[in-house]
Amino acid sequence: MRLGFAAVQNYFDTGKEIKEDKEVFLNQEGENFMFAPKSILVPTDFSEHSDKAIKQAADIAEQNSSKIYLLHVVDWPQQCAVDYCIAEETIQAVVEKSKNEATKKMKEEVEKVLRTKKIDISFEVKSGVPHQEILKEQAEKKVDLIVIGSRGRTGIARILVGSVADRVLHDAKCPVLLVR
Image 1: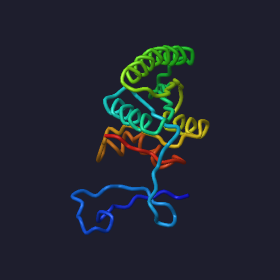
Image 2 (image 1 turned 120 degrees about the horizontal axis):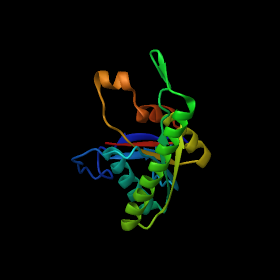
Image 3 (image 1 turned 90 degrees about the horizontal axis):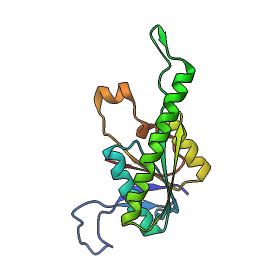
């Protein structure tokens, strides 16, 4: 089944105009249907944008009795720069320390969500290339929806830095909800 968006132009053919376009999912026959994900992946970097994505995912999960998989990926630091390299053991120690700190933050995030929502939520901290690990997690857990925060970079910053959200959006095998 292929998903697509369409704007609703009138209200059930009554001639009433809708002041704002609303997005609906259409199936291959052009009929609208309700999308109700049962598993939601929410990658987080602990930013304000990620917090908004977690809140949005929690709302969706509560409405649909969905499970949330919260994921943080510790990016491997660059080992060499120009003519100086950091020892592999040092890099591993930094990554392990980062994973331990991220695990503490993830526990806090889960507790914060569970204070206001009665949902099923778990978390995992991995290391690697963020967009690749997110896509692997989506495939392994057979996730129905990815909800990811976007910083909304534009212009040269977007070209130079790239965007994990953009890469996930383009390569995911399930719907992706970008939250700004």
